[in-house]
Amino acid sequence: MKVLGIESSCDECAAAVVEDGRKILSNVVNTQTVHAAYNGVVPEIASRTHTEWIYAVVQQALDGAGLGPGDIDGVAATSRPGLLGSLLVGLSFAKAFAWARGLPFIAVNHMLAHLYASRLEQAPVPYPFLGLLVSGGHSLICRVDDFDDITVLGTTVDDAAGEAFDKVSKHYGFGYPGGAAIDRLARSGDPEAFNFPLPNLHKGQHPYDLSYSGLKTAVINQLEQFRRRPAPVASPPSPPAGAAAGAGEGADIAASFQRAAVEILLRSLFRAAGDTGLGVVVAGGGVAANSYLRERLAARQDLRCVFPPLELCGDNGAMVAGIGCRYLARGERSPLTVTASARVEGFKRKYP
Ligand code: KG4
Ligand code: ZN
Image (cartoon, rainbow, N blue to C red; front, side):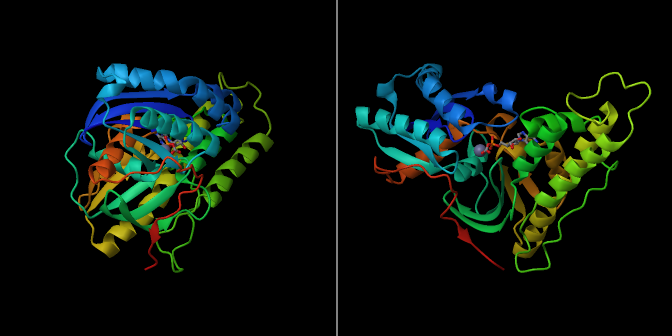
């Protein structure tokens, strides 16, 4: 079964063809670089850009797979969560494609698709396992019993993990998108240079929940302290653009922030692994590309950690086509009246 998958939930305009839920025949991801000028995604510009690009991206995905529209057996698209205007472009295009060719259509959840990414092109991990889903909009620690059956054990009470990377990067002028910029810069910094606070959430009833607003505020406050200090007599050769921190300090901030941000995830994840007895973690989402997170998880002898390849961590159509294939193979269909939703909704939540 060859499924066309379309992803347009944020600033990636993406389409792919996946065969039998595992084999990637093509995977086209066009990132809207226009948002760099604003240091963040502008929803109105994102949806308009999807409208301009979607046809060519789908055409490239078909061409890349060496297929015509008549060779496709089903169509999948992300319907939630994400930016509403952006979602509607890919979703409507996918529905129109399916309707015009009389093909089965399925709408999929973006976070479940991120989780599915690790099952593409590599041996699938047997269920159950722990899922670590970390993106720009969501952070979920969950028990995974099937590709469409997750129970959320922990989630963020404020900012998502990727959002914290993006906001810190924006304040310091480290670059956009923030996660990849901080990851790069942190390599030349000292992760112990600043001791940023970790949230103290775990005494209550939600021991796996996460919080990023305190860390984000502390890191941004540090920038204010840099700004208030007297200017050096001879200014450093090339401080990072827009930053009051010197070049070395910028790298130290990035490394120290990244250490704390990853520590927040790992504290909850390791606690959940201990309590549930699940010894395998499968990660997904843009933040799963983080090199320090990967390093820290690889160092755990008692946990097996499986990541999607780097190119499948961020938003892509292959994960949508892959999971779409699983639903379609089970005989599931979405009505063409299905609409988009900004919210993640619908997951079971378990309070220990
Ligand atoms: O899954 P994704 O591509 O889009 C959403 O569903 O949100 O995730 C994007 C997020 C952004 O916040 C971005 O800064 C972050 O993933 N990200 C990273 C890295 N690469 C992307 N965060 C930390 N380290 C990275 N290497
Ligand atoms: Zn995503």
